[in-house]
Image (cartoon, rainbow, N blue to C red; front, side, top):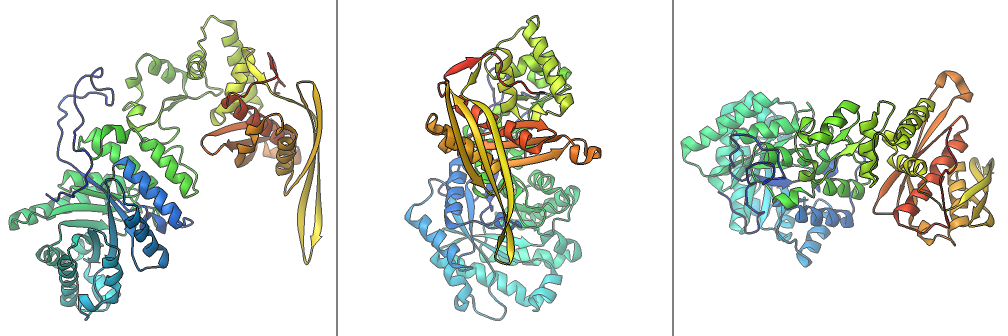
Length: 574
């Protein structure tokens, strides 16, 4: 088997009862199988996603986080494709990764040219990586129509390029592009391309579902056929799998290939990739390691998966998918009262594995469907032990349902719920009181165009001191937020670290026209944490004010800023 010098821990997940093995729900007949090598292509294939662009700094941040996760192979890109790729590989030479192999990616030589004379291959060698992934054509259609060369020349291109890279001291992973389409169209020729790669010295043959149109039963059958074909030849080369999600089956296809003998799985974090994306490693890793019991990375590294997913989504500036399996905020969220009550007694009733195994956490969702079990569990998650017989518990539940009837939605704004909970218990800090505000909007000429400008004036009281402040913004909410910050910054310097990271508006009763009620969700961040607050009103500025003010209050409370006073009831909603 291929054995890189740097590899992840090969310790398998121990089996046993729940007490002895907290990372997994125990199941009968669980046996550890062989290592599956994870190959991440977020920095190359993932970066081909529409709307995603990575700087050198972004790529370095992601590479180092993947290294910490324990990913053994990280595809860095195609050296020579652009100056950024070259610089990336050179920077990693200066400061190497801890355990991961960084891999250069390229295609076979051009038709009718010697590999050593092809200028495309020189930057690949200059990148200085131990491993190179080379892709070549498996589908005769692509050879004749795409490359516009003969089938025999394509075989020579594969063999010559691999042999040349081997002669230069490189180890080669061969990606058989369009493998499944090619095999189904002309299996004999497709297998001959693999034969050329094997004879030239490739150490892995990666079967690629490049168009993403193959289904799991087909992937499993074809991968098994290749596995048997290699065994009949006595070849020791390993099989890998690379799948795209155009049919929504990329993860299932990869799992089917592993069950058919593949020992390498290629994919991307969060499933980023061209068109519909690549196989999502955040889904594959737990399924491989916790369900199929095929060790990939160390258990303590797997327990950082959710954090890694969120970190990389922040770097690429794409919102995390809250409903993503295993790593999404909602992956272990419970809303129905019966579900919550059962999970409180035994999590196995409604969870397929402990959320901590992948670095996630159990969440109880508060909504108009909530029962007492939800309220008690949610309060407990914030550190408050309430009893069912406590009148405050019933009052809080009634208040939640009343507010949700008015349009509030606390399942989407946990920060506002915690403030409401503390308000009911008389423990909500009162950092300031907004005694009035005014917002003026105007449209001004700007050359041949127009620009909008807003001016907000706020009156704030902090510990008996009255402050009047004004600020401009490109919109009313931005102006109001800026004016509040100016008024409070001298009292609470931590506010300088807060910023609005998202702003969403929903019309709740569109039939009412311009008199419709509006719900505003504001996401705030301090660079490390995110929290969501909300406001509801027939006046969009009033709804925005509620959400912005609570965002500032919650951020101060989270940082344990001392408040001048504590109020039992603070600006009740509704």
